[in-house]
Amino acid sequence: MNIAVIGTGYVGLVTGVCLAELDNQVTCIDIDDEKIAVLKKGESPIYENGLPELLQKNIERERLHFTTDYNEGLANKDLIYIAVGTPQGEDGAADLTFIDQACQSIAKILDHDAIIVTKSTVPVGTNEHIKDQIQAGLPDDVTINVASNPEFLRQGSAVHDTFNGDRIIIGSDDEYTLDILEKVNTGFNLPIVRTDLRSAEMIKYASNAFLATKLSFINEMANLCEKLGANIDNVSEGMGMDKRIGSSFLNAGIGYGGSCFPKDTRAVISVGKKVDYDMQLLENVVGVNERQKVILVDKVMERFKDLQGKKVAVLGLAFKPNTDDMREAPSIFVTENLLDQGADVHAYDPVAAENAKQILSDKITYAASVKETIDGADLTLILTEWDEIKKFPLSEYKQYMNYPVIFDGRNCFDLEQLAGSNVEYHSIGRPAVY
Ligand code: NAD
Image 1 (cartoon, rainbow, N blue to C red):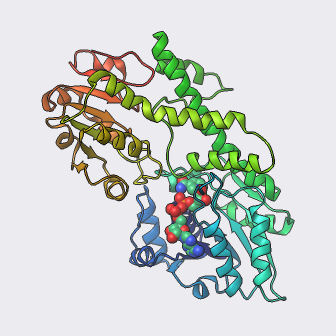
Image 2: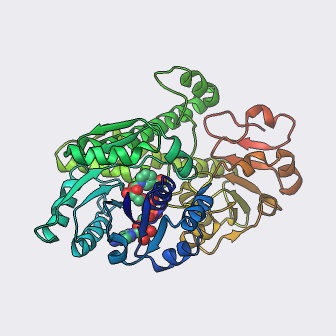
Image 3: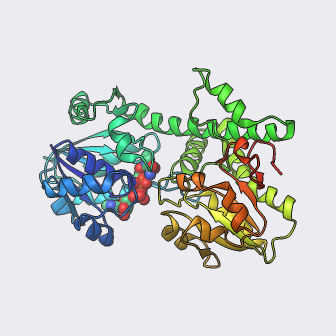
């Protein structure tokens, strides 16, 4: 099929590349000139495993094209995917400015019938608004249909997830539109759920809200474990063996971040408010997450009282491993707190340092390796569980730091590994090791 994808961020680019891999003719459109220039050279502007290879392959096969020009991008396209950002607005609601701009561009240029497919995470009812907005600007003889096809990929394994996810949700109030979308998605070889427009939009929000709830739940249990002398690792393992609970998303830590959970949970709360429904559970999920971000700094302050002049090593900045994304990363909050306490912060992240520089204060020194970061440090904080950080030998903390004390916000080490290491170790939901 001939497909246009609007927005070449984490979702749009991966979608476009993977649809080209399924032998569709795909043109990706973005308003960001720099991004498109990089993509035209066959380079990926984001860090995603496996993406550069598929990108180059499909450009060479002439199945994948990039443009900033909507005229060129929409020409002869049967399907138009919208994958622009839907960030959090000031009142917590999803900000639909980018969606509206994309709709206006489509309305101005589209001269043939097409199906508009929304990949972006949008509040229930938005696809109807998208349809009305675009249709109002089109010539009388051009008709569009709309579908919701929410995205469930995880950053860091986005390409893998596109071909190996758990399900594909397609929602529309038009059966023919669903048939076409089912056909397009058959190549991914995943279970396809056909549903109505509003339910599809709701499935995405409900899924993210549930996962965020699971994380806040296990973090609360972890905090209680610390007070009661239990070990959250053992608790999570025991809980996760129950198939009704499942073992994923039971890792205690310093809270969720990223471009989805924080904004999507707040968007659901906001949607509830609009229809006069108080989302009590989710309000607390968000509150627990806010509190969790402070927990590691609280532990540090309890142990050190004063950080003036102390060299603090921060390992990991990205909101999770295998991504360069810094959006709502707990490291932002933790690092700013450390700076407020007068700490001399040295940080390392295998891929997110460049993005971090744009968000974090330039008072931080960026190091090129774990070793360089911890060299001469008075304390170390682990904020992202990159493999490289998990595999770094504990013995080297003793060798390089002034005094080896680690505050691990991601429980990277089993407590048994600490035995005989001579490292003082504080983690989440587990007894401290001295
Ligand atoms: P992103 O910020 O990485 O990318 C959005 C892109 O859209 C940018 O390149 C921007 O320049 C472009 N854009 C904005 N307005 C445009 C316009 N009018 N025309 C053309 N391009 C335009 O965002 P993302 O992380 O890819 O997320 C996109 C959507 O997918 C959001 O709604 C998000 O909630 C949802 N989502 C994201 C993830 C994720 O892991 N990132 C997962 C599932 C769903």
